[in-house]
Image 1 (tube, helix red, strand yellow):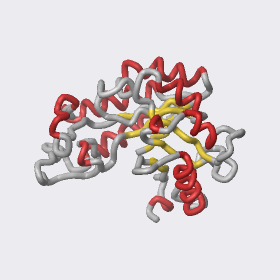
Image 2 (cartoon, helix red, strand yellow):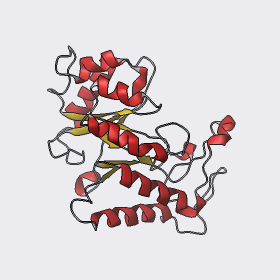
Image 3 (cartoon, rainbow, N blue to C red):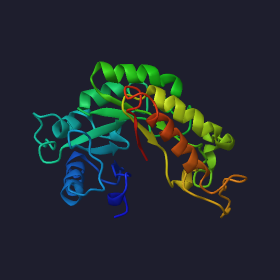
Length: 243
C-alpha cells in the first residue's frame, strides 16, 4: 500500500523450495501476475514488463527454462505474464547457461566479494560484455558487508567487515560502473547474513548496530549514491536500483 503512493516499486525474488521445478515456477509466476500485475506498487519497465529475479536458477536445467521462457516452449509464460526474467550468475560459466535458458539477464546477488565468481567486482566488466554481446541485462549486486556466522558458524572466511560504510560505497561504485541498466542491493533486511541496510540503533542478540552513526546511516549512503546517479547527464544516469 505504501509503495503504491511513492516512487518505490516492488519486484519479485523467486526463492527455491522443496519440489521446485519448471511447472511450479510457472504457477508461481502466473499467481504473482494475476494478483499483482495491475498494482501501482509493482515495478514495470518501459514495455510494461514485471521484473523477476530467480535465485538458484541453475538448479533447473536450461532445457526446462527454455520451455518457460522461449516462444516455442510448451510452457511459454510471457504471453500470459509479460516479464523480465533474471537468472543468478554464480560460477564462471553460468552466463552461457543463462543465455541458453532464455533469461533476459543475470544478477550476482551475493554481497561477499570473492564468495563466488559472480560476486567478485573484478569479473563484472567481462560479465557485462558477455551479456551485452547477447543483448541481455547484467545486474551486479552490491551490499554493505557480509557476516552470516550467527546462522553458519563455519563460514567466517566469507565475512566482510563493513569498514564504517566504505565497503558499501566501494561496491555501489563498482556496480553502477558495470551495470547496463539496473543495480541490485543485497539486502534491505537480511539480518541473518549481516547485509541489512534498514534503520538500526540497538544491539540485539549479538547483531551490530551502526554506531557511532545514526540509525539511517546505510539508507543515507544509498540515497547519496542514488542522487549522484540522478545528477549525471541523461545518457549516464539511467541506472535503476532494486532491493
